[in-house]
Image 1: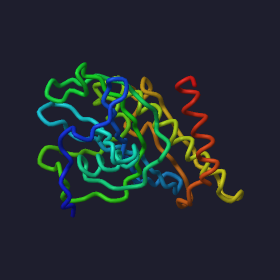
Image 2 (image 1 turned 90 degrees about the vertical axis):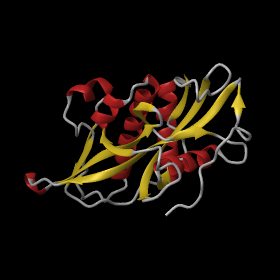
Image 3 (image 1 turned 45 degrees about the vertical axis):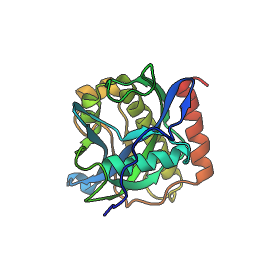
Image 4 (image 1 turned 180 degrees about the horizontal axis):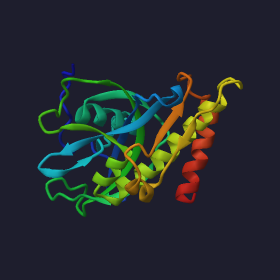
Length: 233
């Protein structure tokens, strides 16, 4: 249960280049899918999206980055306030996107410009009561559905990077497993492929149980290279 109210107002809001700084995340989980094919255990990745107040669309939790918190603290706070979830935040951002507010009632700046930092958050807890529960409905979606319901280009771009990072994580994780264990297959589809594939277009199949995550040093190095290649820096 959460008794902490959501932050309101813009007194502590950070700005840069006349743009409002925003922090958010793509909450995700691995869901086991029952299958009897060759005794395999199949896990499907799902992401959490939330409804927008007074608008008929779904978005990822995000909000203003304030001057008394780090960008990662802001992402975790927004996930708690808007979606009512807690979890393990990947500290390296998926990327930085610039976009304009679609609502005149929620301008990012005088020109409506936002600069948003997005992270991946592995959900470990879903609260039954959260600060913005009355205005936000949450919905778990497979990747195909998430692409279809993301009305903004920057959200689709963030999902594409998210998929690549998840695939990289699983590849590194399998490298740390015992040599005698058969590595699982990883199927990653880009946005265009997801539109035509089955709802489980991004999944992991394995005959073994889940093991620990890869070493932090390897993870940071490989993921930093992936993000640099994507954004060209």
